[in-house]
Length: 435
Image (cartoon, rainbow, N blue to C red; front, side):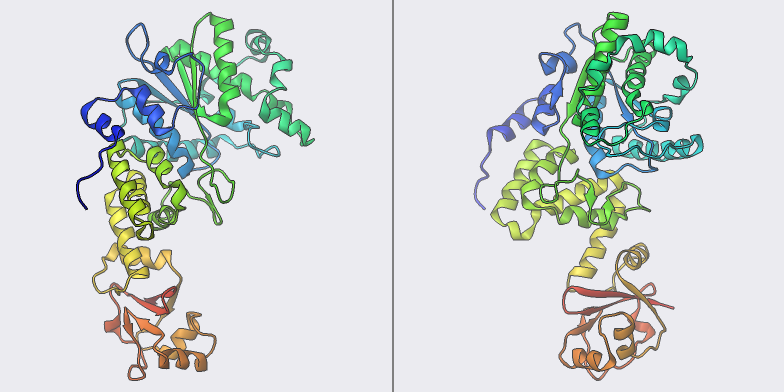
């Protein structure tokens, strides 16, 4: 390979301790911020540290991979010594943010929100690698608000003129989609959240995705008017799938969830393994904790041989480890090797065997089933005649070994942890599960 080409960025990471503001810029996290300089937020001129909060929508019992950007931004703040608050929208979740929605969404009951909040908090702890953050739920104070006092103390600081100019509101009005007063009032409640956290925890920074900019900025302005204090807003750009135009984390099958029951570690691993080349560097920067030097080295190897998908492999391994742990990654890689490599299942672990059956097309079979029947039952052949032809042509393998006419039935010895792998060609696969 020769001597590596040390770029200025690699040398900078090696010989200098990066400031938080530089890290945020370098990773592409700093999109919009309310101060003239980003350093005002990350390195207060008066010294000390900030208290930063992120609001989490409890509409589902899991976050998806698109949410990882925000969590890693907060992890950077946390590791730089700042305090972090995760605010679950138990109160606002009963209303729903109109942003990014073409119609009003269903309201959630308290029991569902509590269940979702607990599940999401556990995912955040894993991504942070720490429990050193504050958890709050805005139902704690929003459910106790007096309507008249709220209109007097909060509502008077927001003008309808400004509220209808917000992109999220304007788009709904232009499409003549119904927008209830409930949704319209969302930004008032979010602004009140910021004020409450400022008073209780000296919280002075709210962060979020770029689609939340107007709501966050309204809170900054509200606190300035109401309390005469300066607080700040910071947003990161939303990652968009360039081929589909959808927010990142959405696939043809729906969202790629952080919950292993909703999206298995194997499927998450495969999702990132199949990312287009053009997106690899951006995702390595925004969705991993790898250093700039490590990312530069990975991209150099990737560019030398894109077909090897070295960048995607590192991305898949790092993100899946971050969310599910190293053991889950080892299992995912083992499954990938079995399904798409040349091997069978002889050396597969019990955990990988179970995950394999759940992750790939499968068929339950008896220990002495006729192979011709199994090919039809597994939908690898449409008829017994076609199945015999595939076997005769050498197109069928069992655990990596080509079938011949000499072997006509399955045997229990073909199975490891009750699974075997039947293939027609390279991509038509069925996991056989012993009954």
